[in-house]
Structures are given as C-alpha cells and as structure tokens.
Length: 110
Image (cartoon, rainbow, N blue to C red; front, side, top):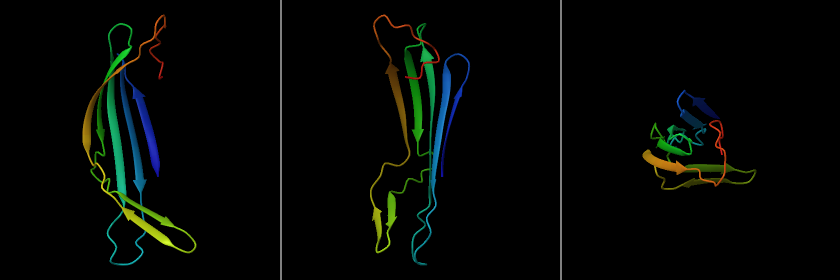
C-alpha cells in the first residue's frame, strides 16, 4: 500500500510526503515481525526573484521502520532476504535550475 501527497503553500513553499506500507504474513510462529511503514517527507522553499533556486529539507524513514527485508514467493520456493539499509536520516539540499534565456514559471515542476 502506498500514497503520495504534494501541497503547495503560498510564497514558493511545497510540502511533499510519501508513504509505503508493507504487511507480510508470518510463515511460521517463530518469524520476526517483518511489517514496515516507510514514510518520507520534504519541505521545499523556492528563493530569489526567478524562483530558480530551491532549498529542501528532507526526512527519510520518519518512523524508523525500514528493516531491509524482502520476500519472494513462487509456486515451488520461498526466498527471504535481509540486508543492511540506511534507516532514518535527514538531508538538507540545494537545487538550482539553470538555463539561458528561459522564462521560469513558478508552477514548473521540472
């Protein structure tokens, strides 16, 4: 189950959020709980007159549940993989859209 949300506030501020929920059935009573809800969000502020520069603050895996687990089930086998993954982290980024002789539109999402 997954979903995305984008909300544009006034003055060049945008909130982005996405969530991905994985619910897995236990194959036997001794299995660990391998359910995970991974929620990511970011806040973006376009700056300067041309709105071609954006400052972005992001938080990935807000609930700290990215467990690094994958299960594939076929007609004749079951494969389970666990792996190391980067869990919750924060990121501050800078994006600059530059092009010569380009009219920048505030609603331009590219």
